[in-house]
Image (cartoon, rainbow, N blue to C red):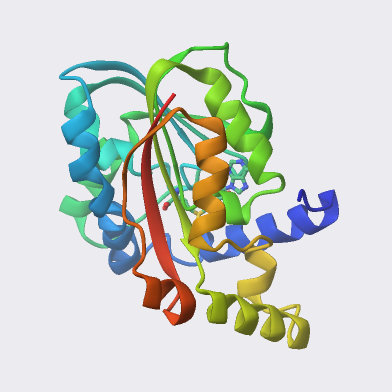
Length: 232
Ligand SMILES: C[S@@+](CC[C@H](N)C(=O)[O-])C[C@H]1O[C@@H](n2cnc3c(N)ncnc32)[C@H](O)[C@@H]1O
């Protein structure tokens, strides 16, 4: 279900605070560069040798994202979209700063929401949307827009935080007790793996790869980042 404009504005404020706080942190920037590496290998296996047009929705306001660090040698243009403005990064390590600027320069940053993508139908060969939809206003509208702008046969690399059955019960109880905590304001939506999987399967024709949790993890495991590679 979409959240209100007001709740989304609050989520974005909280999000921005979390990015602004770390613009001089080597640790945070290194983490951003490697955080979703798990998805790179299956994606490289399915990606054609040369892929012209790629888009990352919710690229994050450092403008780094997942595609530019991991796949740029196989990609033509990379458009990166986020509703927040791109921030400057100022690291104390000159070599890392230079590398980070080179990665950022691979991405054409567009400030806009994923619910109304400013692109033609069938414009991209590859779209990534990594750890975004539980932070967004209308997750299913974003997924429909991604489907619209992907070419037939195009690839979609997706991830979202998923909670176990027990984890979601605890999350909802804690959110009722402390609704103004950063965690709850910045994550207006929650998912369990099966629900995310069924939404994705209802839109995309093929799941090429996913890291489905074990049954024990699904019922009582810790929250985790879950990944899918899909085809339109
Ligand atoms: C947790 S960050 C993840 C950033 C990046 N994808 C990564 O994995 O490092 C969530 C991002 O989603 C963006 N976001 C939130 N709502 C969005 C929306 N409606 N459309 C596109 N991006 C959105 C946020 O601004 C933020 O940059």
